[in-house]
Length: 251
Image (cartoon, rainbow, N blue to C red; front, top):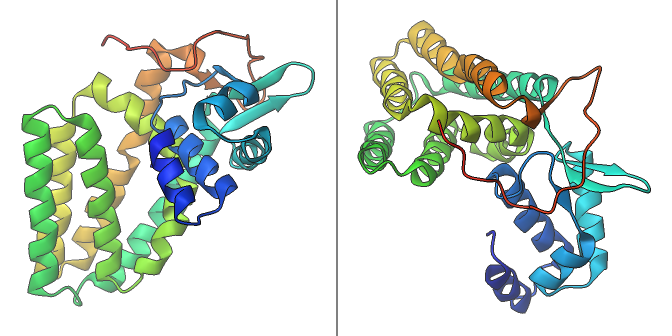
């Protein structure tokens, strides 16, 4: 849910306003609608979303705790630049949990489980054929979530999802540049094939290689768009900019 209209619909059903505002803003940050380094205004966001400043302010504080927003007293609030250390930490958590779950899934996956994973692979191929990157990202999420559910550890997925926000920003930046949807789908297929064969070592290795691809992508993105990144020991001081949305970037 990333729209003001969706927020108002959910509010009418009794959901907490702060939680909803947090979801909307987090989705926009992870989806790069709010660009790394850009300024955000409590007043503007409150007016746009049709809420008071209080849930916006509280949501921004939560987002700062997640490393997605930087709050500078007397200066303003800015969408955080991507920090490579945060990407590495998110990758560590994701790999540890997903690979542990996959090890439990091998030997447990049913024919129905494998069939459902292959349906998602077919949908990913269709998204690739249509150059539908947004659709592919949604299907990628569904694939990894379903893969974890096969192991019986589906309840751990929210932990993975929460941890990988920085990772997802890097992945969303990398896909238009690297044009590697076909490669990612092929890696997904390898994992499913090895899972079906009951090859524990092969499936584990295939998933680890797949998840670690983001590291080489980050280097490519940083070389082309250094302004989107911040070093651990030398964070970039933000400059106030009028734009809040990510500009379209050419390869």
